[in-house]
Length: 147
Length: 359
Image (cartoon, rainbow over all chains, first blue to last red; front, top):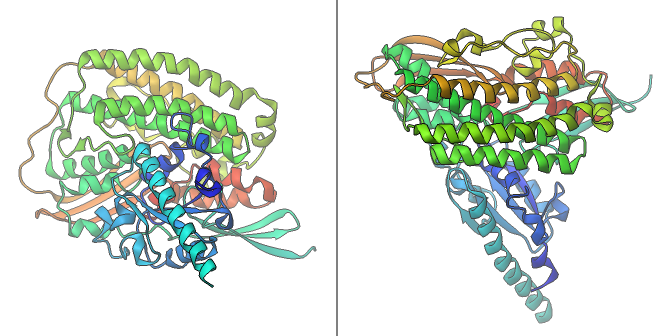
């Protein structure tokens, strides 16, 4: 385990969610679930973040915003699609302004579908993301060695 | 005149759980104008009535907003029931009232927490959300969901609450009331908190009326206006008087919401006392026809549902006017002339729910 996976910093962006998942993301930081005890910190700055939590589906207007946040994050980075809307569009799939899930614009590593997500499921997704983060880091190290 | 600067605020901003974008025009530290741009969460839910039938759409209506979810579903059902001339059983009306008030309590506690975070009082934020979890437990025990209840339905409610459970809820709420009182004391008596909220963002009564403010924003400016006074669901049987404050600043808006927490607990108690055994749903036959405006009071203010149907299983048109949308104009008014450091607390003071506003 490297330092990175012991205290991952997350950034949360609300695509076009109904708020349900967003408040559950915040609720995970609260005394009941308290992910901060694992060193997980919710940051507002993409340049400080390792994990991007995307809630809600993608539409024309938030597409560049999501891409911008993703591009600003340093490597290695992991994207979690939180909730069914970020996974596939969910109940809003048929809406005219919904393009689909988060994977339409950024590569998604972990899908955590449910409506809305429960804090337990969210924490589970973040733990899963840590393994992927670790693998990505090892891969980029190996590449550097090769060079 | 000093140089003007434009500072973009949002859509991704640490103080906002949801995206809204404001262009703040500054003269030194003073905001002279705020230009909003919204639409980051627009999904096009109103158009979806053409693809989901009127019963199914209840679930979509609940997902217009994840915080005031139940009241959205309820208001939609009220509109459809009026079109179909369905008489909702009395017990269902009381259950609807109880769930509405529970969702108001959790929403106000959520707001208190976010506001505390907005002025940098982290432990108060945690404390508010800790109490909110207790309320969510009650909601989960009675409906199965934490934030989206799924218990409103055209013609009544989907689930009943056993009398013993109701008694237990009242007992629990009495204990939480003490915790909420302690929490309220910090918000209302603490010098540092008062320093951030008193006299900040004053909305006069005239402005509140002229700009069409709704909900706690309007009541804190001295206007006694609450749709619960109209007596929908069981509010008519319980008797209801709105909570009004007169100062119109952030402190008053905070006070209105804290007093409403106590009021909601009282309403739930009265409901439990008055409720009688009975059926919880009426039979639904046929399809809606005609048009109707349904109004109800959300934690953030008045919500209006306009439904138009032509006797098929799909509604022809649905229009939702949400409280946050109405409160954006007053927000722009109170932002004028404020200090840049006060912007987060002023944006939070309207209790913004962008996903409602943009649908």
